[in-house]
Length: 435
Image (cartoon, rainbow, N blue to C red):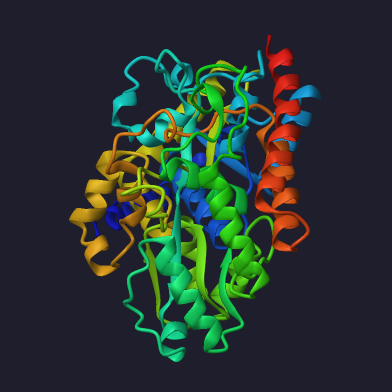
């Protein structure tokens, strides 16, 4: 493949440099939230860049999960010890935009000649200012899909090719799995992101007012409307009947699916890296289901993952190194390899085209589903993403309320009404702080 030749040539170039790189290199600190297979792939990117030139050295450091990495970056900036590059998950976007004096917009770092048009609109729009300039660099952008354990379906006497495009069809399959004695018919990761945030976008229903926060900080949450209540109510019934097994707020359910215990799994498209590496069963990726009772066809899903923010307080030559690294990450060959290795979306159209021309989608059916889900339709005001202050904390509230539904302690309406009320209180505080 072309990108492998490029990577090989970069590594070869590094070997030729040998000891001639003994002079001091400009070090660039990069804090991220990846471990496991994704951590290995980030390290590979860093090593490839470092080996491709002798002026800069990227020093990558793992700082915990997404929330912990964001908090570490904030604390470091207050102490004057901030890194050059900080990975921040998508729900921290509004927080970073409001961090006056802390960030250096990516379009300024990249300088004249920076072609923002090459980045996929549905991805870059999340990290773009109202005037159309990119504030951070999309790095690991994913969208939710349905992962299927085909062997588990076959063992339960279910045709593994059965249509599960809609949640109505999924409900019928869950009934069959339960009747066949399957202990984990379905589990999920990132319950708020998939089953409220993306559910809303996928059905072109507001998650919040003011274009989901894009049109102003005076936004209010609105995810307690009939469409969301109906979905969470159905999942609550599945939980009560043992058809939906709740494993945790983040990606705890991934271990259960990769071990072959669960038949269906709603998770990020980026689950591909771990599932491909660990699963010892025949698996498949399908589009995220939609409710045909709510929409005649789905709209588009929205991204998860993170972007790379550049922090203020460093020297000009160091920012030149940051720009060089970000240009490297955006190259078609590196992006295509990252997309193919991880399941994350390619952030440029050229990387997607290169992946297709290399035959990857043909050889790995379903790996283009995430791209299609995100790009087949022009996003609406309800489906272009979320930009809400204090959203990490709001997600915590949503998680807590959803757990009340799964345990049978609350109805879906009660839980979502409570989450909206509690979340709105945080939005009002953020609005005041942003003025």
